[in-house]
Length: 378
Image (cartoon, rainbow, N blue to C red; front, side, top):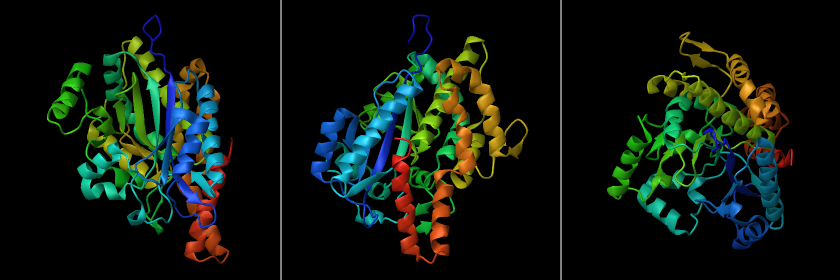
């Protein structure tokens, strides 16, 4: 936090990747030697994930979006280059287009063994990946105030990031099937409202004291106060195949937080809508991505998504400029112009089918396109 009490708005980005065989495009478990190779290259910014076919990276604490981009690009390059030595490739996508979750193996790590035991059969379907964006908000009560206001924007971020239209080779009809899987877990979805940090802490301590969870890292809301850092952590997004899209969404997230803080300094606040209403937009983002609009609650009608995003960019533009990320925020419109990953995956599939491929071959073409996307912009 700055001397005048203003939050630092630092950034940290976490991404989860899937590892595929470069020939078959199917998922593979990461060899131990690969993880050692990644650790040698990237240190503690890389770690294994719940399933052996997954790998997680996390940037350091970044002062600017430009710094976060450089850090995340280096992490992607490191994982990609290490994986190539074993005939593998990473993809930044929230569900693999055709892999069978029944065939995946858990990482042999105490935390993940406990998760498997605690979550029972629900854990077995967790073949999903996400992107988490941390924004530095050092004051405890300010974090809770923003935790109450920010959920209005979560569906917007989800729609922009959607990258999970397929599950086990099937067209789900959704842009983000990942949330359908993730919402089966306890302590997920939109965050509850709290009057203060003290009330939040009492609630968390109650279930820790009951020995349901050992700490707040097992609170998996779409937005949560981090248990390890003085940040608010947006967790709703699918992981995006292309680096530029990930950075655009992170910049928009950071700028919205700064806008909300500026309102507070003016003794104003964003209207807090009923959870029921925000959940409806969350579902629309999950189902349609940016293709069918979200509800404008004040107007009580569905508004085209591109209009909503244009208004949002205009609203946060002064704050993005102060943060030095206006160009990145404005690049969100590029996601709409070329389509989200979910839309592009469907296009690749259809083009392959039209060219004479059978469905299995066409799905492999989708994964090949995702492999190429991973390196774009690095």
